[in-house]
Length: 416
Ligand code: PMP
Image (cartoon, rainbow, N blue to C red; front, side):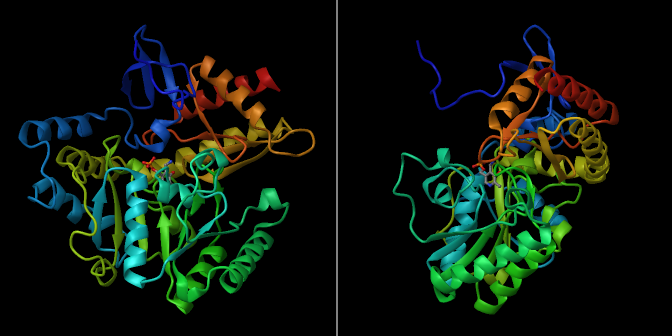
């Protein structure tokens, strides 16, 4: 009898048969409040009627086009529509299927455009699981151990992480920028460095927001040395943090922006955006793929943009996020073991610590399991698995947030 690979260890015992909004149902019609959203993917909720209708209509017209052979209308329309939401100047697009592929596309573009080999990434960053992207992922050894040697030419510099350094945000930022200068002076000479690759908020690394000063410092150094700044917004983009792009919280100005996850409400689609001057440096045929910008995925992405706009989902993420963070903070206030509740919009992490103040993945996992038993689906993140994260669909209602917060309070009380 065939079985799934042991690497696919499930975080919850749910076998879902259908989904609606933030709810999942199994064959017995048990309801689960899904605050994982397929790892931040189903931005408009499970099976939003407008996304379903758009995809169904497209399936009946054209499923696959292959963008280096023929062009199709959903892709042309999507490019136009993304032009309305992308940061100014980033108006040339390339599409792929997964976050990892898009990060690889950004890496290739940065190397081609600058003629330089090295990448500087930031500690705790997650950028994917292909060999090149795993080489730039430093949010846990499980993503790299056992399949080295990885890609050469990657240097890691600190990300400002106040809690773990025991510093203020200002101190952590100052430290991170000083270390970056040290890295540029001792390990990765600027003339050999193609790009800084960074998440505005560490995702798999534990939901740690960066700071305005940190990203301004990266921009300054990038401009000074002709290094590109790449923002990995795979998890943080498309309204998740209460702004369309998380970089907006920090006035971050990137040369290449990477998007995926929330872009197509669950259909595989990812992309990178850059200026025309930069994108022109990637010569024809050097980027591509059989399945990139699938017609049904593009139709779903257009519908996703319509829903985000018509239902005010970016504002909803900000408001429901504030409500959720407030509720989670009230729970944390009762338990010393929850060191911090942090994040922006509907991307919120609860960090667990043991009695010595060290990251406590075991307790985080127990609470996450308790929550699943009560019908609240959550995931963990962070290098030690010490953070329980809340990333519901952006359509989540006030009442669903209250329900989840109450189930969380019960789950925490059951363990602590
Ligand atoms: N970058 C970031 C910031 C991510 O969060 C992820 C996925 N968790 C990826 C890249 C990789 O995306 P994918 O799993 O679609 O390859």
